Length: 589
Image (cartoon, rainbow, N blue to C red; front, side, top):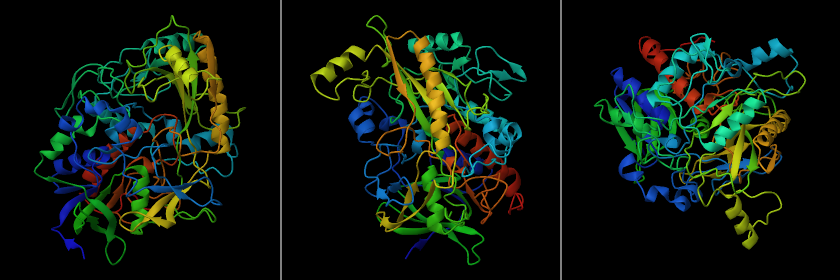
């Protein structure tokens, strides 16, 4: 039987990026807050220091910073006719765990979604007609616009100290920035990172084809910076150990470098690590959350009562927690009814390799997770989709994040997969190959969803989350078109050989693409198609807010972290300014 603890004002489920941000805003408002984190405590010193943090076998291959899938994983299948099986090794995507969450081991690529992403259903119908999209797509508007979120994007970028260059500032287009971005009120807090050689060649080639290259916005900082919370960040050293690693230099924005120390010093906040939350509790009416039940590291079960519950975990775990707690109606793909688990989406990736001769040195080891040059000419609806037969798009860029010896070994087609000839080819091409990424959107459709697995359970006896996903024809068409554009740029870069192919089905969890899992607790204006309202407040339990990439109705071309951060501040503002003053629904259906 669970031990009932003293009530608090708010409980956070997950102390990653979202949990840290909401914790700071709620304690600043005077609330007593408890943060429950299932993983271990970890800090830049001593946990992220060299040389052990540069152990590629431990962190890249064996996934030391990721969720322990011997205790808690998920099952996967491509379609409902298959039997889902547990994922025993993380490869396709990398759910984080531990204090700071996935924002510890991210690359740092930080974008703003465009208005055409946030109002995709409406704007597509206006431009191309109501019947342009395939009938089985579940594309829908988010309930917010780019103008609504602009102040919150701005605040998030200044919290992180993002390095970049504005392209649309106070109604004026700025040369060298992203001309397709929506209007912003301020430039980035720090200037762009230095441009690597491969990125410079990409920029010149893209310009020659009439495109608009600009420096990738980066949470790996170009210069020292003190953020509004008084936290100091340092200049990135281009060590090449960002994704899958914590940053030893205090140069990558993560909860540990931008906010956590401030929150942990707040007398109104209590952190509890190694606490596995089992469920969100409800009162007898089922209309109000009463707190959370969790098991600590010794196996003891506790109930933490709270007036306000913030669910801010990894996207997949947010969905599972609602399903385990019996909150909201699970999505049924047969009838189309229900909302929890609906609109799961991912990212549609492809790549182009440009092989040079021995006289061109790319130096891939002198990189960061977000150094590079990109174009947004084919993002979202920045180009005419009318004759193409798909919606969505991709950014294209030379954004090589590392040249780590175990993971990076480019070889041209025809090279043996192993043996002495393979080794010779790796030696020949390692320092003479540039890689272009095609980072594409993923639309939601009726057959892709998340639910509870009927067979497999975790270490606490609870059903695992089941993922049913495959690439939609829309996204495969998009990838074919955009990969061809990347090949054109690659050829203009002057390499001896340029190779690449579009994304093809079926999707597999055995090949890494991105960790950009989205959807399942989506936001919107209609309770029949969304789990939370525009302020990320549960339609069913008004004192429950669900925050993270699980709120995305579909996934855009850009990386999701900037939008997750903006939505976190958007929701926090609504909680502090509206909900706390008058608890109850902020939007009436």
